[in-house]
Figure 1 (cartoon, helix red, strand yellow):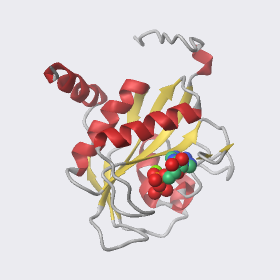
Figure 2 (cartoon, helix red, strand yellow):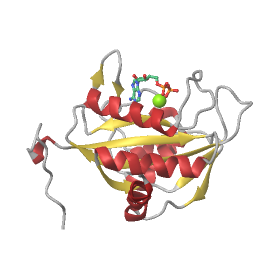
Figure 3 (spheres, rainbow, N blue to C red):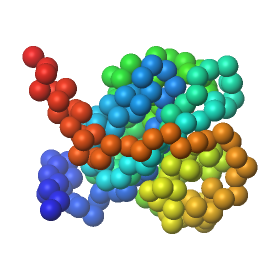
Figure 4 (spheres, protein in one colour):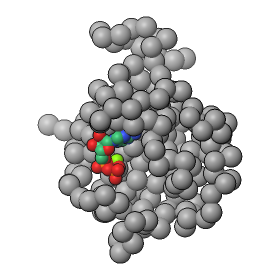
Amino acid sequence: MKKPQISSRNSLKTMHKNIYLSLGSNVGSRKTNLLKTLSLISGASEVLKVSPIYQTDPIGFEKQAKFLNMTCLVFTSYEPHDFLKKLKDIEKSIGRQKSFRNGPRLIDIDIIFWDNDVINTKALTVPHPKAAQREFVLRPLARIAPSFVHPILNKTVASLLKSLEPQGVRYFTKAPPIKDIIGIKQKRMEKAP
Ligand code: ADP
Ligand code: MG
């Protein structure tokens, strides 16, 4: 049974949106960074699906550690820019420092799709403009949303993935069950003074 969604800002279930996120880490305990991030995201939204974790050769700036990447489906009533702000706060709380484009990072959270919406503002471009060319986004995404249709390109995630040349993305490990991921946060909160 799904818990009723209660929000003082917006209690209309129809206003909730399906959001696909891409997570990546190549500094520190990469898998722990991904799972902690998911548990924090579950505090701001409902995490419905998580993909397995893939290991990816770095692109752009190649002299750095390999990335671990995964995707998830979340359900939220937040407005896109407010949700982006939440995600940036989560990146900071995990310990992300300023780096450079394509440089090493503890955690990167990108919004890939916001239902079928197309968003073009200074702060936010959705669908994510590089998603359709990145195997490290599409391969894990194809595990949770192969039939999702890119709202601009009108192609499914599976067909976009098929059209890519290999980019050094390999299966790494499965993700724990969602209830255990959320448990990471609860355990941490229980320990807090
Ligand atoms: P990148 O992910 O491109 O390596 P950052 O994570 O530092 O770099 O993000 C840079 C900026 O990209 C963010 O401050 C954010 O406002 C903007 N941005 C635009 N579109 C998106 C999106 N779809 N998902 C996440 N951030 C986005
Ligand atoms: Mg980013």
